[in-house]
Length: 229
Image (cartoon, rainbow, N blue to C red; front, side, top):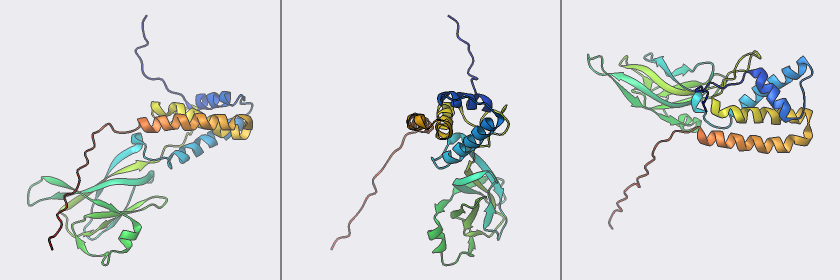
């Protein structure tokens, strides 16, 4: 028997809502039901932001550095900065080298005695405001530090129109529908809340476990040489 030879299955927002209502043994009877479900879907996407890093939402950003400027604003859709490095230009050549930066906490940044000191940046601090900012230490002091490059975690896009598809990769479709069914059951059918919650958490756990990088990890113990007496 022939197969479809396609891998394009997806659901638009209206299909997602209908599937979720069916799992609650409920029907959408009004425009308000659709509006309520779309609101719950957007809340679900916000809740996913507290569940860790979603690889399909990681993006790379380049920021032109200005000598004497330490703080830069991330894109408006940024949730957090994951990794950062600066590109340096050596001598008269056009060759650039990327130098990795170490991420530090607010407490570590606050403990720095001279935050205005200038030199080659080696650390960065992220202030997670509504739109995050990234502050370098030391402050760039020369034009040889050309770009700040970083990977940042983007927010999942709002559901928008009912004809849109969700800003979600295919492997998260099952837990997205299950999560919306769980949210809707709290409003329309409390008898299946616990059942839908268990299904949602199970689906989400599998998706999060799958959403990782298959790379090898090597752990080497640090050599310690005790001083003699």
